Image (tube, rainbow, N blue to C red; front, side, top):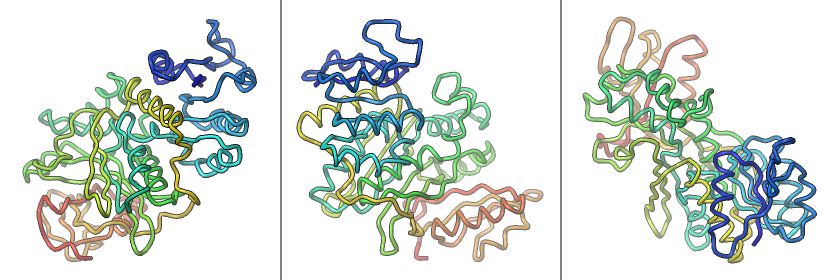
Length: 391
């Protein structure tokens, strides 16, 4: 199956290279920006790709929404299969692209958009056919995991030094906002919700790691706890949840052992129980390998990852119920009734809350910040300190 590649950056170059070695696949033309077609196998004319009947599929590795969305629309409308690693594209326009694909009998697959080489979405789509998915969660952003690992491995490691090192290694962009705010992980868990539950959330809430300090890390470590950034989605009686927040784990938890820029993704099936995948979450070859896997799936007859009837909607479930460790100013401590005071220093107080739904906690924190208050919070994994977690 001859496949054109859109973009020749880190991932695009990896896809092109792997296409030349993959059995049953063939590397087609590579679409690049105007003036960059410096070899015979590159082109800056997308119409040329669409008009070539030998090109059966297109793999997109450009990122962003423009021109990726218009190129995706045109590809699928032409009847050519479309595979992408672009989480922003699928999170924003996935339902619309699936509708176009159905009308033209083309395939639309995107397992590389969540977890890089970690086959979470691929296996979710397979598992959903025979099992009911209960929940999905994991460490889905390698940049923030690397930074948290650095802060917890180096004595006194600061957020600023961890970010600088991540940027120097190419794990973090010059503008790391999407990663450190949790937005990147939120986009990925929205895709997982769509594949697992047939609803692509248009919203969700996220707390990243920008407010984590070296003092926070020392405090958590003194209690034998490891901090990780976790994305979660689940179907509940109230609807579907989708959110990202820091979570504290005991040292024996699988999440505590995920080091550097690795990902750990898990889903729970009603019949299968908990299934987990670990591996590189980004990079040239991990992401390219997921694109190649999707192309191989198309050769075997796969045409979609979303369940039939998938639609956009609101992530309206309040999420799971957890106790939280909170650092805030004393003036805001009363917002957390029943909280245990763990430490106080100057105007800072550390609390362990009563059980809160995730949505309630995120709303309280937003209220504090709207009043210019300082606050950092992390959910406590129930296995770290077993207690009654009924809200």
